[in-house]
Image (cartoon, rainbow, N blue to C red; front, side, top):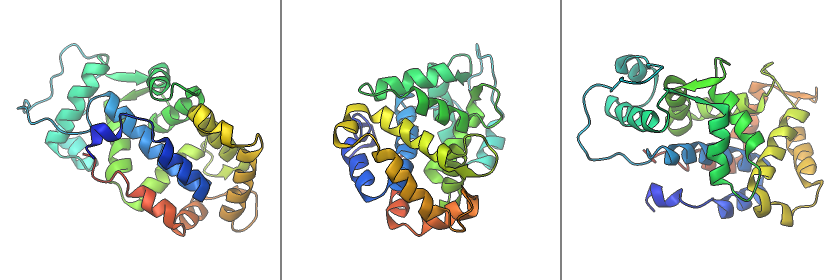
Length: 245
């Protein structure tokens, strides 16, 4: 199925199946799928055959990204792909940056039956690696490079950073609960009618116990990587969108 068609509808069937097989799989799929929805919003899922200028157009943009050669060296995208990405990014974000409110507006469009504001907040913070309150083109393509073409370890490290809300290098149970609750809120009516009120908490308790291998009340990066790589569902989920661009 073409990527544009794939992303035209919320992937509720896939997510529901992921939830039944394991909460961790749901989290991984939502991270990947929601990032792709951002690509779809910018019109960048498949490359145009139109002729592209050799250099980036920089006029009337407040923030100018780094040179193509540097970004090409830092990411898994080619120069041509970076040109296409930037063209779409500039068209939708003339200032050259994306703020958190824009993220919330984008995800509100893709998940109209739920409240995506909290998840958009967490996802924005994961993209905003410098914590400046805005996502520049460099931040955008760096994250997409990891999520779409990174190694398994790179994708899982990025996901760990999303769950590590306070950025202390660990995931505690409340942080995991906050992310999971945000995912359920975002899915809205596609999730809540089939779940009891305490279901997210129960899933988190089981999942956290599985990941917290030394039972010290926190999940380290190593524990997160080990647990995820032991799960076949997660490994399959990480490959779902490997070739969308």
